[in-house]
Length: 621
Image 1: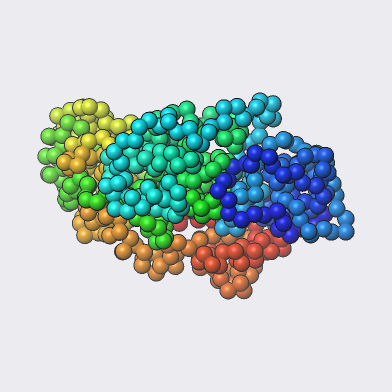
Image 2: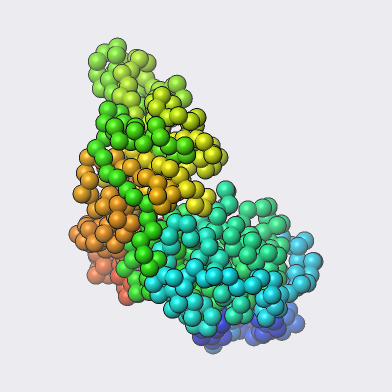
C-alpha cells in the first residue's frame, strides 16, 4: 500500500454534478481516499478492487490500513501500482457518494483551503443511514421538460435592471458569474425569477441561504414558485437529511434550497446556484475544511458551465473585486437616510421626533444589556471582573462579566455595587417607551426573531436582523454606528455595514432611516446614505492591502512545532504574523490565488514531518 497518483478516471467539466444514471463499475488497481481526515495522510492509497463488488468512483468501501479495517471512498483507477497491493475487503454501501465531476469540485476545495480530502468528502453529504438505503429513492423522477407547474410567465423584474437581460439570457442557455444587488422590495422576487428562468430552460438550481430559522423570504418565495419540485435541504434528523439527499441524487427535484451543505447537493443537470445574502457570516463553514459557500459555488458553476448569482443588498468585498457582471435596478430605489449626531444616551432630537410619529419602526441597537459598569462604588476603582478582568455589563437586572459570564465582583475589593453608564438595547427599549405612541418590544439575545407588528416599535441587535422580506416600516434607526470602527476584527466594519443595509431595507421607500454617528463622512456611513456599497469598497480595499491582508487573498492560520516559522519562511511565502503559545507556533499567511496549490503541497509535506499540526482557512481576524 502506498500513495497513488491522481486517478486516471478524472474527467473535465460536465453539465451535471449529480450522479449518472449508470455509474461505471471499476476493477483492478484503484485510488482510495481513506476516512482519516489528517493532513499528514492527505493522499490517495492504492488497493485492488474486485470486479464482483460492483464498486466505482464515489463508492464507500472497507479496506485494511495499518493493520486495521477502515472505510474509504474510491477515487478512480490508477496507474501507480506498488509491488504489494492489498485488496478492498468490502463494499459498505451501494450508494455512490460522488461522481467524477463532483470529485473534481471536492479536490478543488481540498486544494483551495489546504484541507484533507477526506474531511471535504465527509462534509459533502449527510451521515449515512444504512436502513434508508433499502428504500428506492428514484421514484417520481422529475422530467426537466415538464415545467408547466411554474404557471404562466409574469412581468419580469430583472428586465428592468441594468444587465438584467444579460443575466436572463445566461440563465436560459449560458454561464457566468453575476453580482445581483436587488432593490430591497425585489430581493425574494428576483431570486425566484432566476430559478424559474433556469428551470424553464431544462436546468436545475440550488439556492443557498445563510440560515433557515426563521425561513428567509427568498427561500419561501423560491419554494412556493416551484411547489413540490423543490426541497428544503436543511434541518431535520439524520434520517430525513439522508433520505432527501438520496432523492436529490436520483433526480427527484429540480430545485434545492438549503444552507452551506447544499452547495454540494448532487442534483443532476445543475445550471444555476444562487447565493442569497452573500455577505452573511454564516456562509462560512466553521469546521474543517472551513470553506466559504461563495467560492465553492463559483467553482462548481465554472466546472459545470452554469450561472452563479451572488445576491445581496450589500455584496462582500470579495464579490466586489471579482470579475463578475453587476446587476442592479436601473434607478435608485433606496429609502432616504438621515445622518445625525447622537444626543444624550443616543437620543438625537430628530430620531426622537421621528419615533413619536412612527406606527411601525425598528431600532437597531448592537449593544446588549442596560449599560456598562464603569466604577466600583465601594472602592472607587475602575470596574473590572474579579475572575478574568473583563468588562462588566448590566443585563436583565444582573451585572455579569461580558467575557466569562460570572456575576460581577470588583477586581480590587470584591464589591458588587457599580456605577452604570447607561446604553444598550434594554435602555433603548426603556426610553423608547416614553417616546413612542405605539407599544415597544425588544428581541432578547437568543430570542426568536420576528418583524415589527402592525403597530409596534421593535428594538434588537444583529440577532434580530433577518430576511423577512419588505416590511414598509415608517422608521429604521441605526444606533451606536460608531461601534463598528472600534470593534476588533479586520472585517468588523464590513459586517456591520452589511447588517445596516439589511435593516435599512425594511424601511418603506418613502420612509426614513436615521443613523446616529459622530463621523458622518465615514465611508461606511456614506455607503449606507447613498445605497452604494462601492463607496465603502474604495476606502476599505487599500486599508486591507496596507494591513497585509488584501481582499481576495487566502488567509491561513497554521499551527505547528517551534520551527514552523523558519520552515514557512523557507517557502518564500514568509509568515505574515508569528507568535508562540507554549511549545506551539502560530503563523498567519496571506496567499494570492496563484500561490495556493504549491503552498498547500508544501504544507502537506511539513505535516508529514510533524512540523504542521493544524491548518485553518479564513480565520476570523
